[in-house]
Image (cartoon, rainbow, N blue to C red):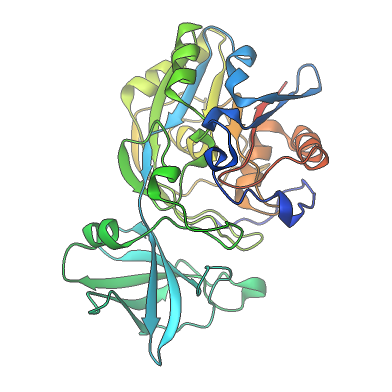
Length: 359
């Protein structure tokens, strides 16, 4: 895995009360009724709008690329030796059948547990139907200042296939800023078709079927990729995890055709950006691709394909923000985040959205 050697240059501070604690629908809004900050690098304007007005900012011939990964119920309450309560996040199934997992503090997963050791076991279910045994840190020590291990490769023994047991007994991954645990349906996008994301590809959440219909009717193209997300609770400066992705042939062809004809490729989220850029050759020509990506985008590896980004708002020092800078540039990203902070936008998976259009 490639390790970040730098952190984002964008600097800001978000008051905790600006963390969205519930889905838009629970706040009396439609999904597409969240706020939309439009940062246009060509006009150097910042506009405050609403997500259902997205078609006003796109043009016929633009291509919107979405992630069709479906969120799974990847959070479990467990018990370790000595009746140690923990919350487990099942991040990614690896090719050898083991899983990447994260241990977090009970009861609300507020903090990563960095004191676990190889060989430790954790039990899940009333009759210990599932046992998780830690094998080794994955992929390397990643706690603050190199202290402790946040992610582990783990062997899982279960009375039924673990994915099936998760579907029956798990819940969506959530963190302490949420007001409660929300049902899995609240973590699905209208594009979700292929189960596999530990956390919601949240940039696509504000889309509705009606909005997609309006985009298509206006001449905007829509095409899918698949990228299954891991867990997004990285420590400051920690690089993104390897993630499984697929760019189908029809999407690759559409991306290349739109770029050749002068249209814009608008990625819905950092997941889509990572997948498309992982499938591009050195000239920015996108090929049908599938497998694992370890790509880390940033100043040392700028985007070659994506020309616009629809995204939520990310924490300072997160690798997601570095990827936003790779699309928008540091200056436009800073201006967008300054405007979001100054105008009380909501952060995280149930929060507000940005459309970033570089010059």
